[in-house]
Image 1 (cartoon, rainbow, N blue to C red):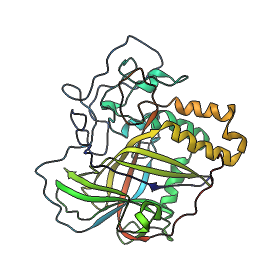
Image 2 (cartoon, rainbow, N blue to C red):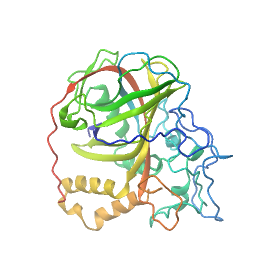
Image 3 (cartoon, one colour):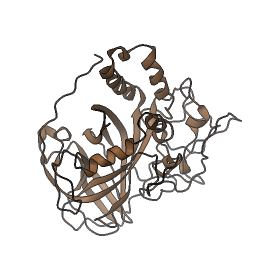
Image 4 (cartoon, one colour):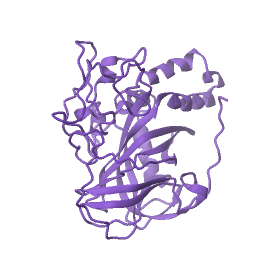
Length: 370
């Protein structure tokens, strides 16, 4: 099995994630701070109302913008992801079934537990107690808690393969800043996200790599016109925050087949205190459940056209639906609505690189299930 991961589609807005839902912010980029959520369960219990962020309820949120921050004083700076964490290990590499709790933010504004009544309705066949229970401070990461175990049962070394591809220069993801200083608090910062195409050599990750940008993440292939921009990014206490909630698609290629993970309401944070060793990076957001199923259906159809429909794939699809833990737009709280979104969070580390030219466009894939 070969695996690679890269950004291929985009969007963006000017929403500021810092403190959107009230309450106290989490520890920038590392998650897991504060909160009252438990670690899951298998049974029911008495119904209760989940607390919302704010007041006495502490939530794990991105650091808020420091209004005393100064304009960045330095030149352009680009960071390339050198390692990704899918959620099956802690950042030190230790395997843990609860490692997913180290990655993510509270996305829906509530700290949900197994008995919470103000929560979208879990999909049929799911384990409501498991789906409803957030991580510390209301961290939402159903991908890590419920989908990743399924992926690992099929490809136990998926995370290792992805990082081997990065180490070989097959791909990366780059965060570019038009200007970035060394001050602990900086605002505003004009940033953008670039996909890193095949480098053509083993990356040194010492600041000298000139990494070409994926064509598909540029408007008209123009390196100066990235599709994903962060016009309101900022740095608080050394933590870089994207500021704008973006829509980003990650393409995961397994055994020659590409799985697109379109993440909406994406928030990106990272500790850039040491610009040569960016750490505690996070990408958190929401997957539309049915869009994910359609993407998986096309991969299944590439293996066997009969899997484009029928009971075999529908069984797989229902497992995916069972991981839905909020609404596709990132909201939650209405028990009359069926959950149709899956929260996701991935960790990363990054190193400085030089933003290169635009790469050639990729060959379009064929939809096997049209």
